[in-house]
Amino acid sequence: MKKLNVTILLLLAFAVVLGACGKRNDESQGAASPSVSPSAPASASAPAANASLLDTIKANGTIRIGTEGTYAPFTFHDKDGKLTGFDVEIAEEVAKRLGVKAEFIETKWDGMFAGLDAKRFDAVANEVSIRDDRKEKYDFSNPYIVSKAVLIVHQDNNDIKKLADLKGKKAGQSLTSNLTDIAKANGAEIVQTEGFNQAIELLLSKRIDATVNDGLSFLDFKKQQPNAPIKIVDETSDASESGFLFNKGNPELVDAVNKALDAIKEDGTYLRISEKYFGADVSK
Image (tube, rainbow, N blue to C red; front, top):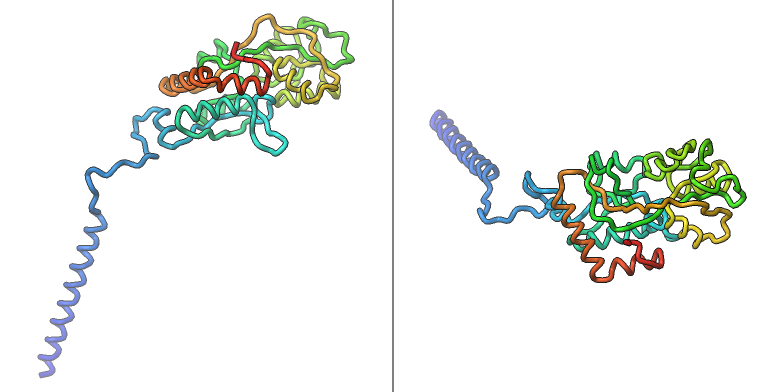
């Protein structure tokens, strides 16, 4: 009788183990092969492997824009600390026409191109002059601003009256700017700065003799600080054109940005922004 009871208990235990194993196998198969509808849509934030940068931007809903944030009136922080400026507002309007939002990544000018190379951002909006040497490596949008370079000195300086007088003088410049090339071409000794504001600070304190800088930036500065003791003594004969900067190989994005620029010019948005910062149409 005892042997019979033991046998029955062993059979019952074996049956329980078989049932549990069967259940685990069913669950395991269910986890490994979930039921998915063949018509389920793909994630909007997961574009195909061969998607263009424009496709990726639209899928993510954001275009990353590299900008300085220290270069008034193009890109700077207002009294409340908000990033604003002509280039910032133009970029925001372009993003709106693309159906996405602009995410600004602030970067010092001398690191701007390296940041684009590393794909930290999708484009640069920072009054980047369209130059042949840059076009060898990068793509540009159509121009959206035209300006002249000016030679700025302290009010007390009567030795520097034209660009040629820069020979042997200290000029405060951002190292990779086309404005620096103008100063170098005229024999200036370059003192590295991080942008317009620092160059003006050095000039006001007479630690440099001059700076070759953007004429529109100077006009904006004098509007804000009319009594600042600095003056323009010369300017270049040719105006420079600036555009959005892109890594090569993204023609769809460049074309979309150009169409967006055309749209904001046609509907009056560009003129409104331009007059807000400069009192004129700076696209011509």
